Length: 323
Picture 1 (cartoon, rainbow, N blue to C red):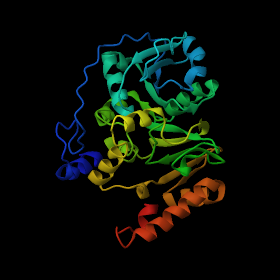
Picture 2: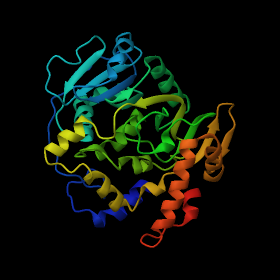
Picture 3: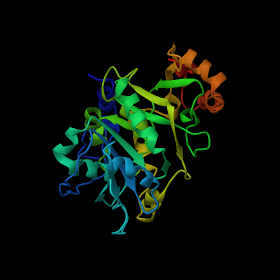
């Protein structure tokens, strides 16, 4: 039994929603039936952008047109003319962020099986097109299940630990954020039921690494590649969800309560340096980041202080931060 299943079964007693796609992780009712979408395949690498009217993915279309990767735009807006350039393939999917991704991937049917690697990209990410192939290469060469590029120092972000760390090639972690995850396709299909009914998907990044045992060493932040999160946290789709009466914090609150997990559980357990040396263990990894990663140093100190403040209302062992 995987760690994920054990957590899910314990969470089941706290779950009030029904029709669960996985034990213990319920979701609001979501029953949209998508018409199958025929995708023109040029590559075994796929980028899916969940896009509104101001998406920043347009620079990726030219490389998609020449076959470096396939680019599918999952569009939740209403402009019939957008995202029709060579290299772009558009599917119209209203609704929330991850519920929309669920519908998009479901609409592909068996076509998704033709892909080796899938990158789920937010529409407010600035990406250098020439780095995309390199990102896929690193993910595949290291046999990763789940990864993400690091973030540039000037990115808007919720977790500074995800900003690029000097001297690091890969940081092996238990946390890949929801805005730029790269999936092994088979692993994506394993966690896909988690997307169903999720408006924002907040909190999924705390649990989706646990879907199989043996994930350590196969979930990573790729520091060799950095992208920029160019807008404030919470974009068009969150505003639309709030306007429709959806509580954008529901997903995060439910997952944290159901699994008994929090942001304090995020850890980096190994760092592979650019020269090939690997620092194993959360203690050595944290020590390296204290020296090399000023954003990570501040994050670690805040984490320790927050754990100390929370001791009165939630038992937190400081040693857990280094396990």
